[in-house]
Image 1 (cartoon, helix red, strand yellow):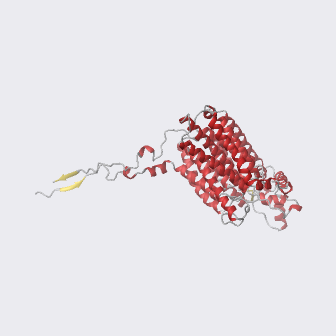
Image 2: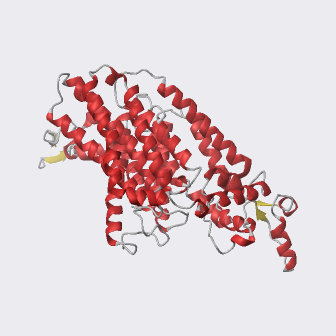
Length: 510
C-alpha cells in the first residue's frame, strides 16, 4: 500500500538571515571606540556641569553615574589588554587616594579617637550636654568627606579612560577641550552683556561682574583658558610643520586656513582670560604662551625647515596680547592695582597653617575645611569674611589629610618633574604626540602653581581636564593581539554585505 510522499525539511546548511547584512559602519565605529565616546561624554559633561566650587551639587550626581560606565569599560580594557603591569604605579596611586576618604569614614573606638589631635573640643561638648558619645570616624565631617570621596570619581574615570585610548583618540580629546573653552568664552561674553543678574550665570555664588563661563569662579575659567592656549599652540605648530613638510616651498590654501583658524582660537581664549580678569590667570596665560614658544623651539621638525614662516607665525602669536591688551587695559589694571590689604589670602594661609598643625599628623578629614577653619579664625575677623577654601590647595590638603596627603602631593610633583625631563630630552622628529605630551606637562605644572594661590583642582571640570593631561604623559596601550567584538575588518563599506540565498535540503520519504 503506497502513501503520499511526505516532505520533511532538513536542517538548513546556511542561515536565512545573514548577520553581516545589517552591520553598518556607524555601529562598528561606536562599539570599537566605546571607551572614547564614554570618556568624551564624561569630559564634556564635567566641563559643563562641574564648575561648582564645592562638592554635592546636582550636576555631580549625574557625572558620578556616568563615571561608573567609564570605570567599568576602562578597567575591563586594561585587564583584557594585559596592561596591569604597565599601569601598576598609577593604579596604586589611585588606590591610595581612594583609601584616604574610605579610612577617614571608618568608625574608631572612643578610647583611640579621643587621643587624636583636635578632638578634645567634640569630646568636651558631649560631656557638657551629658550625652554618651557614639563611635566616631577620623573625619570631623563625615557627610562632607563622603561627598569629597565621590568627587574623585570623574577625574579617576577620565584618567583611566584616556590611558586606554590611542594617540589619535587623545588628539581628538584635546580638540574637545579647546572647543569647550571657546564655547565658555562666548558664554562669558553673553554674561557680561546681560549684566550681573544674567540668567546664563549658572551659580548663585559667583563673580557677578566678570565672565565666568560654565564656572562659578573667574579663576577657574582662566585655568581652562591657559590650558587650552597650550593645546592650541600644539595644533598650530603641527599644522605648520605638516604644511611645510608636504609643501616645502609654500603653504597651500587649506593649511593657511587652518593656521588662521588656530590663531583665531588663540585670540578667543586670550580675550576670554582678559574678560575674566583673573590676576593669576593672566600671568599664567603669559607663561603658557612662552611655553608654546618653547614647544616650537624644541620641535625637531620645525628646526629642519626654513625659519621665515615659522618665525612669522610665532611672532603673530606673541603679538596677539599686545593688540588685545589696550581693549581691556583699564579693567586689567584695576585688578592688578587692587589694595593688597584687601587680599585675604595671607590671613587665610596663616589660619590654615595653625589649624593644620593642630590636627597633625592625620588631618581633620576631607571636606572639613570650613568648620575647622572657623575654629581657628581670629575673633576680629569673625563675620567679616567667609572662607570656603584656603586659596592654597597645598595647605588645605595638609589640613584635611595630614602627612598622608603631603606625601601623595610630593609623589605627584616628583613624577611630573621626572616625566617632563624625559619628554624634553626626547629627540623624536615626527608626529604631534610628543609636543602634545610636552604641552600636557607644562599645563599640569601651571595648574599646580595656580593651586598655590587658588583652588582650580577642587572643581570637577578642571580636575577632569588635569586627569586627561596626566594620562597624556603615559604611552598608549600596546597592541597585544586582543580585538574587540566589532573591528574595522568586519565592516568594509556603507553598503550592505551581500548574502547568498538560503539553500534548503528536502528529503522525500515514501
